[in-house]
Each structure stands twice: as C-alpha cells, then as structure tokens.
Amino acid sequence: MKKYFSVLIIMIMPLFTFMMFSCGGNEEEEGLTEFQLNHGIGPITEKVELGELDLEKAERGQQIFESICTACHQLDAVVTGPRLRNVTERREPEFILNFILNPVEMSKNHPVGQELSESYPGQKTNLGLNEERAFEVLEYLRAAAKREL
Image 1: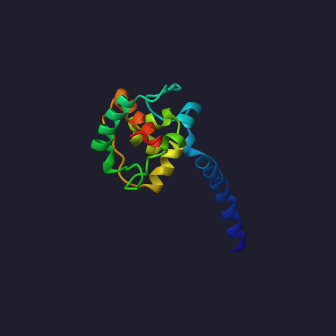
Image 2 (image 1 turned 180 degrees about the vertical axis):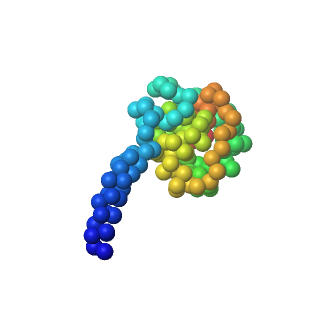
Image 3 (image 1 turned 120 degrees about the vertical axis):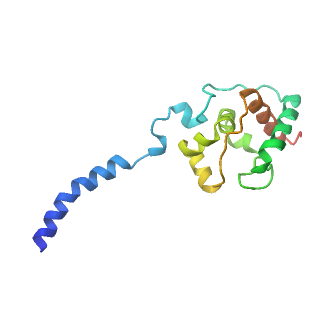
C-alpha cells in the first residue's frame, strides 16, 4: 500500500506543479500594458494634462453626476459604490476617466477595479457617456474635492 501511495505521489506531483505555476501569479495583470496598470483600461491611452478648474464644465458634470451616478455614488457617503468626494486626490485623471468610460472592463480586468468590485459588489454598467461628458464629470469631481461646488 505504501509503495502504491509513493507511486501515486510521484505521478501527481508534476501535474500539481504545472498547474500551480501555470495558473498562479498575477493573472489580473496579464496582458495589460504599463500605462493600463497605472491609468486604467479604456479609451484614455495617454497622459491627460488638466488646466485650471473650469466651473462651467464642472456644473455640467454635476448635472450628469446627479442624473446618472448618484444611483451608486455619493460624494460623502457609500451607497453601492465608494464615496467620491476626494477621488481626484487618490486617483489619476486617466484612471477616473477610464473607469467612467469603461466600468465593466475595469471591474473585471484591472487589478484596482477588481479590488473595488470585491469591496463594492454592485452591478457595474456602462453609462453611455462620451469623452467630453466624462471630462465634465471629472471636472465636477475636481471641484467637489476643492468644495467649489
């Protein structure tokens, strides 16, 4: 019996080792570029330079935020998604824009998005915003962080 157990272990060990090394590691980072790892997955593929706060854009962004985003997000409270008052101080603009424009893929395929999905397991949905509208929401979040709106 002991002999058969040893033979079984010898036969299974290479398979176990193969599975451990082929399936382990940083699966969530597989296939992502360095830019995507740092700035998110989506249509924003280059560094964004933000100028001075544009309160007109921020006001349009506030309207979008209040009509679309508040079902899951508030500035100062957790609903089904995280509070967003100071998100612009925690995340790069490219990351925020990519999350606004591509929330489903970000939640499934980006390491930070996956962590957020585990912490806030609500349904992620594409909002149908174009880049211009996403920039307006970002501008609103910048203004909210400075308490200018």
